Image (cartoon, rainbow over the protein chains, first blue to last red):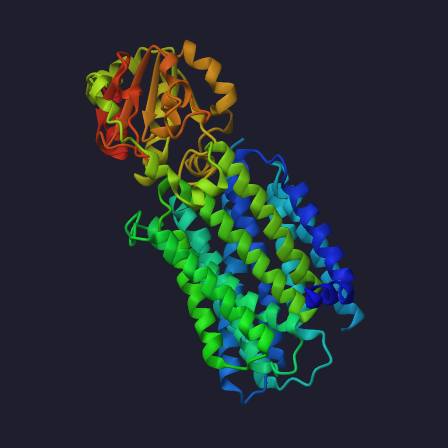
Length: 102
Length: 462
């Protein structure tokens, strides 16, 4: 409990950002037509690949002789970018289909 | 952190919000996706090149190889995948994101001197590992279930007890590491393992129609894992991006549950199958009447209004193209054809729209549930292809039914209802459908694709 209060007081900005971002997420998604649920889900999925940024940071900070950290970081980058590129590409492909029929 | 990188992250964060917002409207969805993708690209490039670390060239080379490798594989999968396989694909990609978060957590645990690191940082690292592991194994489990390599619903004895024990083990283990500041690889890997086990256990009992809800939930969890990793690096784009996906994912999950008249808790605890049919109500339902493709072709050919109700079976049989062929043929003969789209038709919400769009079906022919329901009265023939629970009248008139209250398509108001199914096997919900026993209903058994192809050739010959 003490730790938690300490964390909040040390990271007040982060706590604010988290709470505001939660509300932004809710507002942005509210009342989406069911037609778009599938593309939206895959688009949001691509966004969660933002974890790639962390994976890159891991690699940038790791020592070239620390093979374990490098290996794990490398795998994390591959998986993260797969999530990002695959997610956006497939969402685009789906939305493309919606567009062409007029 | 350099101010330029901070500004890049800020721009990326804004593109995420704008992108998500635009994804919610049919006209702007495509540009929304591209906006968010551009922001992501900017954040990635910025992260690699803008910093004041002394990074040996070999690391840059490795990062380049990793990105190229993952991007090519991801692109290739995205271009090649069949649209019917969308649920599998989303869960697979999602699992990769979760794994990435878990791996980052493991590296950071190894890098930090846990004995002197503050408890909140340790807790953050551990939650990234655990949540990442849960989403990874859970998503892979979901992927396996959806593509059929894992049998649909596995019931293990004492499931709830085992499940709870694993959660308790995770919490106790993590608390122990955090409070005692123990730098132990063994504990770390036990925690990772427990997370992986929990992910499998979590998805294991969930089946059929509930899978999209689980995928959406896991998607939201990956967002949270990314956000937690963001706290670790004090990185705003990860934090805000992750939280956005997390909260949007939860809202989307709840919206899907609503469309199926389910609560999130009942999906997770899987009461759907448990409540199904101990009464054996099928005895009183009467008999079914089966029909042939040529008879169906005749009534469709001479009908004025035909409504096609595509469902999961159509998606599984990949029959969307031949459905479009049938519809074109009927339209050419002067029949007024429409598709009735239930919000959860297909293998995930909105999936049917994607599939029919892929087969070039005119958008104006797809009519949503609220708009089509009053039109069933005027329909001469309703052709139900591989849909079951979304046309089950029990949702209206049987309060004891697990799907009672779920909005459905009122097909029984039409003059003739032809139901194509592979067999009399019950739908996802495992419940009887009295529509099949209705005097107006004829059953047209067979695989959706071949039945529709038969209809097409019969009508062509008329």
